[in-house]
Amino acid sequence: MRIVLWVCFIIMLGGFGTGFYIKIIQTNPELGDKIIGLSVLFSTFIFMPLFLYHRWKGKNIKDYVLDKKKLDEMREKDL
Image (cartoon, rainbow, N blue to C red; front, side, top):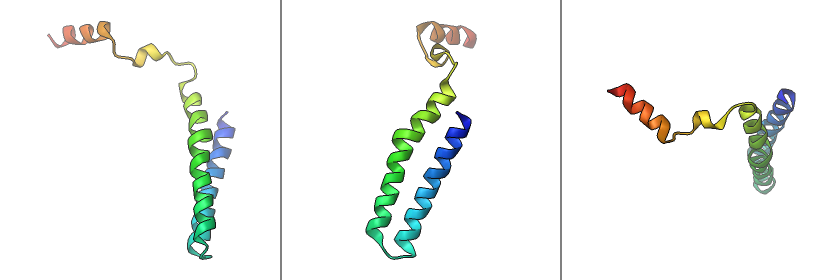
């Protein structure tokens, strides 16, 4: 999974770089904007979910949720 994330990250950065290069250097703003937009979509709908899945895999969500029991424990520690 780590290698897949690195490959996706490199593709995403390459897309942004290519888009800005085409937009600024080759003076074709329409094509550059399309490439940058596709890179944003790729980073939002493919890279981000893969990254979040990789980081949260094996962790218990209840450890990060603030509920009444944890609030009461925090209040007792302050007293």
